[in-house]
Image (tube, rainbow, N blue to C red; front, side):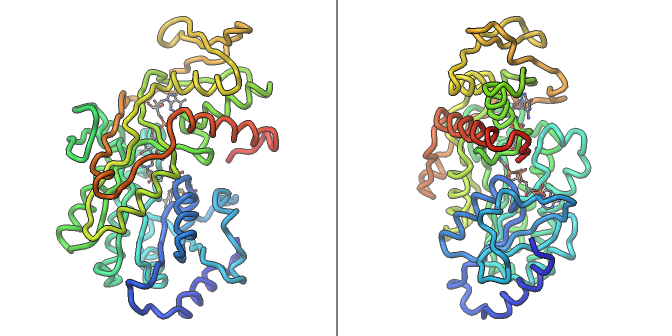
Length: 373
Ligand code: NDP
Ligand code: GDR
């Protein structure tokens, strides 16, 4: 990325007349370097948007997921990046006033549930107050009636199960500092919608994965380990609670749902989910099956292990260090409202998702065994 990108962005905006807001398609994405940010950027560029992203200053490159979309800002480009952070209100005001977006997607977050127990205050600051800062930046810029706002809400709000499946009307009971911070963000979005008549949506998204998923989330940790083990580069995969159940979809489907929420006449909150739930254990079995390894389980609880059925070698072990102080045992979403109002449905099934992720990791490991993306 170029040091001069902000200058380029400034000139992009001044060259464009703001004109009729209905004709302009300018998106601002926080969290553009993350899994969802990268898929959403692809989608919006395909739809003719100019996309601005906020990236954090980092001592190493953190733009790997959008590298394929990025062009030197000295050339004509519709993807422009700005340094900023959700903990820095001034930069948010500055970027919004410069970019004059028509849509903002707030995907930036400390998004790891387990890490939120170690960094509770920071998680609250970024995931909770960060959302407030962004909404207030819109107000400060006098753009409450000109910007549609998407908030990355989460099925982690449901936490301790009160109802299965979970829908927009299920009561919240978050079980982690991350979930609690996201609950603050959820309600501040609702409050600003009601108080200032802003177009703000909460997308209550259930887990969604892809080959671009961070490697410390369970699905990608598993698929990367399966690739490594099958290629003789790792002996064993260590996991925490393998009986947790999740409703896993593909990230590409979910970013389409985010965009659809902002294309409606009326703003509202929506669940996006597949309506299927699977244990981590099933995910592990399916993933090893893709490389033709059958697993048999032996032992109980912390002493449980997964053996390669053919060789008898232990390839999965439980390590309690990955347990969470409070766990979300089961998530299963009901996306009926999204289907009815947005015409949204997932297109990728569980088996297809697992296969795509394992195959992508096998390819990636063969190319570069040390790659951490
Ligand atoms: P990722 O962890 O892949 O990406 C998070 C993004 O947020 C990264 O771009 C990261 O930047 C950025 N970020 C982190 N801290 C800050 C900060 N202080 N200021 C600005 N940006 C910051 O998450 P996903 O793409 O998977 O998820 C996107 C959003 O959706 C998140 O808010 C997440 O909580 C939420 N969500 C995700 C679900 C899922 O299953 N994936 C389900 C439901 C909700 P960097 O690259 O520099 O770290
Ligand atoms: P989650 O995703 O907490 O649901 O949050 P994660 O993949 O981290 O965990 C899913 C389940 O797997 C269990 N688990 C392990 N998890 C991790 N990370 N590592 C392990 O070794 C391991 N072993 C078992 C967990 O205990 C859990 O039950 C994700 C994030 O993307 C959030 O930002 C998002 O809001 C929610 O999904 C919906």
